[in-house]
Structures are given as C-alpha cells and as structure tokens.
Image (cartoon, rainbow, N blue to C red; front, side):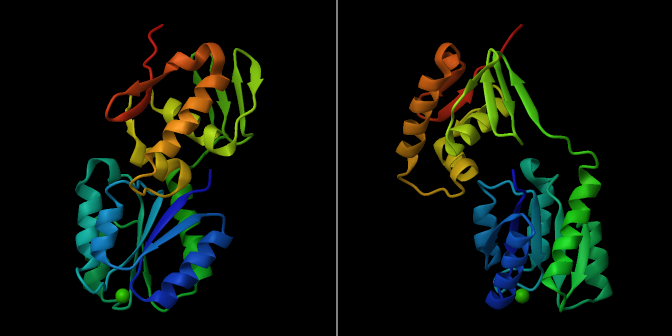
Length: 228
Ligand code: CA
C-alpha cells in the first residue's frame, strides 16, 4: 500500500506543490491548513509520515510535534519539520522534540519527497512484501491476492483492504469511522452503512471463514483472536 503523508501547511500554494510532488512520488498525500485541523485529523488518522510547517496561523507547529510525540498511537510516526525561520533554536527544538528531519524554506518539493523516502527507509530498512497469515486466510498484500485454505478469493479493492486492515490486528476493534478512513481514505459521518455493506459481502465471499470477522455491537468490527 502507498505510504500516507499528512502535510500540515497553511500556505496553499506550497501545500499544493508538496501534495502533487508526494502523489507523483507514490504517496497518498493529504493537506491540512491549520494546527487545529491537523490535531482534529490526527484523532483518526495514523499517517506514515507528517510534513509539518512550524509557522501556522493558530498554533506553533512545535505544539503539534509535542502532541505527536506524547500520543501513544502516533509516537512512531516520523515527522519532517519545515520552517521559513531556519533559526538554530527551531532546529534544535525540533530535533529535541523528535523531528526526523528539518528542511528550511524555500526548498524544492522533489527534494522533500526524497528526504521523506530517506526517513522511511531509515525506519523500515528491509521492508518485505507483506504476507498476512491469519487462520485459514493468507493475504499477499503486494500481489493483491487472498487465499482461504489455499483457494483464491475474488475480492474488490475495498474488500481486500478491509480484510487486510482487520486481520493485520486480530482482536482490535475498528470503528466504522476508522475503517472508512483506512480503507476508503475519508471519514464522514453517515457513511457507516458503506462499511456494513462491504463487510456483508466480504463475509459471504469468505465462506467457511466468515465467522472470523466479528461484529462488535455499537462499535464496529474485528477479526477474532485465534487460539491455537
Ligand atoms: Ca506557514
């Protein structure tokens, strides 16, 4: 799956150039234009990387960096800090607060993408094609292939990603909002039924393995914890 990058940048032109560069570079990129929007988005999104401008209209970007570093699900998310200030104090503070790289404006968006790749490579030195084995299910992420007891299933891309998300963390309950966000890339209220419909179809296709996907009433779905 493409790595997801969250770009926090209030200058719309810069943000758009960065977004395009990342999309071209094989990322899924999303832009938020203020600190408060960033904090809101990070309630549900766990990106693979954050590009963080320090000079934001509503709050110093360093506050977002602190938030990322103190929130359990987000501490591992690498951050590249972007600043027009280029002052030593920012650089030092940024690294102290756990930034992974520091770029001074102006810079070329392509350079930023290269730096981003370097940061991700440092974190995941030998990323292998991912195979998830879960009970009778084997899912080959890169080949977009699923087998149940050795027999191949025909899944749509959304069903595939839904299944991959659930079985990569057995026992973890995913709310409809989080699933929408992870699988469809957006989280709008009122779209929960989309998830339900896809789960229904997915279960049907899973056949004998259908009961491994459990409904947690009032919350969402999870892949059963297997004891064997
Ligand atoms: Ca700015």
